[in-house]
Every structure is written in structure tokens, then in C-alpha cells.
Length: 144
Length: 152
Image (cartoon, rainbow over all chains, first blue to last red):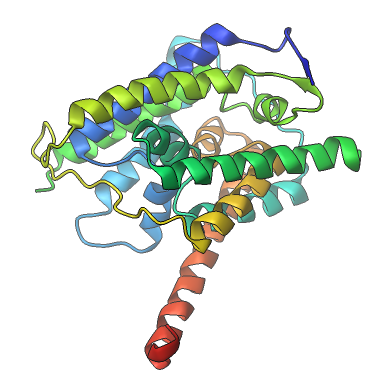
């Protein structure tokens, strides 16, 4: 392992993390729910009365975030190197896996660890290990 | 009691969450993959994103404490599942594989769509299709369980 100091952005990472924590904390204290994005989005596929508006609103907020950001600052540069076939495969795996495992980086990762849920801590370790493994395979073992 | 104000606060939470994803670099798939590439030129930034988010989150959960109602009077609905069962293990591993393939998880997928990224849209569409596959699997599982209750 060698640390890429030129890519390391400790200040924006920490500040961004705090902003994420503020959003999740606000959502907890005001709406009484865990800000788990896969569950909020996935729940829209089995709509229940009185359960749709808040989900749609949270999703709309996430989609609107870059638009709001663009009013005040230059849009962030993003880079997606994965090809279209890879993106489709990845999207399907994320879509099925997060629902089957009942959580993603936000629900298990941020909120679950913050509330010291052993189930979420295990989930987070597992999805990180799987992520490390597939990147190792793709970039180093198979060299694609 | 659900009130329309909760949709507004929900929108605000999603908006701020998304801005946090942008500021932190989580919305940039190449940066996420830089974090997941332990054996390459490793970018540890995302560990700090988690540290920041979890610290503030823990404070909020401590404040929430044993409250049964939120500041706006909604019921506190926290996940009750505790078991580390087969579903959470397999699901999380499958999610991790997808996350490592593209560097995109559900929150950033929505932010990338908002950015107008074509590749972001493709990922998001596939992810929602994946959500649909899960719903179909659950439905079949439910009807099987009804037909063969002894094996449910």
C-alpha cells in the first residue's frame, strides 16, 4: 500500500462528512427515521398510503443537490471510468444487494455505525471487504 | 402523525445530504475507487468522510436517546432488526461487489443523475431495476411461503 498524498483531500472529506452527519441527524431528530438511502428509494416500489411523499421528497432533495450547488459554485468534476456494461452490472448488484441486505453506505455505514448496531457494523465491514476485493481483482490480479 | 411538513424536512435532509456527498468527494466515482484500491495509490479521504459523518450522527442518536416522538411530533421509527442473518451477509457482499465495480452507491447515484451525467443515469436505472428484481424475489418468496407454510 502506498498513500496517494496528491489525491488525499482531508479537509473537504471531513467537512463533507460532517455535512452528511448533520443531514442524517436532522432527519432522525425531525422525521424520526434513519437516513438510509437504499431503503428510502426502494420503498417507493411498494407504495403505502402516507409513506410516499417523504420518500419522494428525500430522493428529490438528493437529485436537486447538484442543481442547488450549481447556483453558488462551479459544478464538481466527476469521473466515471467504468464502461456501460460495467455500470449496468454494478447498478443491478447494488440495487439487489442493498435491498436484500437492508442497507447501504448511508443506512448501515453512517447511521448504523453511529447507533452502534452490530448488524450494521458487520454489514459495513462486508460491503467494504467485497469492494476492496473486486477493485483488487479488477485492477491488480486481472489487470483490466 | 405524518404531516406535510415532514415532506419538506425530508427534502431539506436529502438536499443537505447530497451537498455533503458533493463536498466530501463521495459523489465522484473515481475518488471512491481510489479509496477502495488498497493495493494501488490509495486515497484515504473517504475514511475521513465516514469519521465526520459517524461522529455527528452518533451525537444525533445520543440526543434522540429514548425519545418516542421527534421534535415535530412524528413517531421515532428506528430499525428493529438485530440479527446478523444470511440476508444481511449475502446482500451486503453483493452490494459491495457492485460498489467496487463502479464506485457508486445509492446516494451518489441520485446526485450523479441530478448532475446530468449520462453514465450516472445508466447506473441509476440499473439500480432501480435491481430494486425491482428484489421486489419480485420477495413476492415469489411470499407466495411460496403461503403455499408451503411448513417450509417458510
